[in-house]
Image 1 (cartoon, one colour):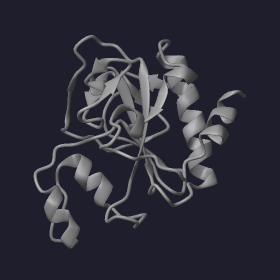
Image 2 (image 1 turned 180 degrees about the horizontal axis):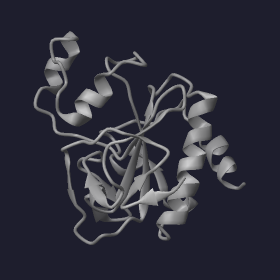
Image 3 (image 1 turned 90 degrees about the vertical axis):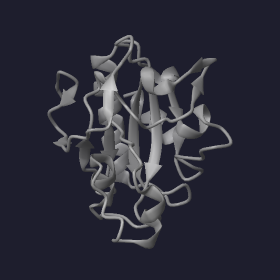
Image 4 (image 1 turned 180 degrees about the vertical axis):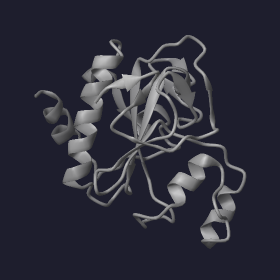
Length: 180
């Protein structure tokens, strides 16, 4: 998986307008999230639409609460393992919100956000774990400050506010895959 200007060649590129420059050009944290739109539904076009700022709020009643929301992630790994990239890793995606890591506020400034298509209580697919391991190893190669100790869940940087990737995420399986 090669990178060019923060974009990975192996990903489907689906650019989001919801990003800005990193204040210090630092990438030192990897944040694992989950997302499904509508909640619990998979394989639909709404995640792309949300991150691109063009979500059809009439498509589902739950989308009204998302109206005007400006969010993005760097990556999405769909249930079938498809890798989608929305924002260059060299830029700041808007995925973490109010967050703190080891006393440092504003994790978007220095983190890469990876969304897994899923829910807190739905097991993730084999294809997702395989793609996540490959992507993480490529990110380790491209960004030397990243390592296995610099990987967290959204729940870890926004406790009490966020629960993802949830109890269904197998941290042991994921980190064992990173060992080679």
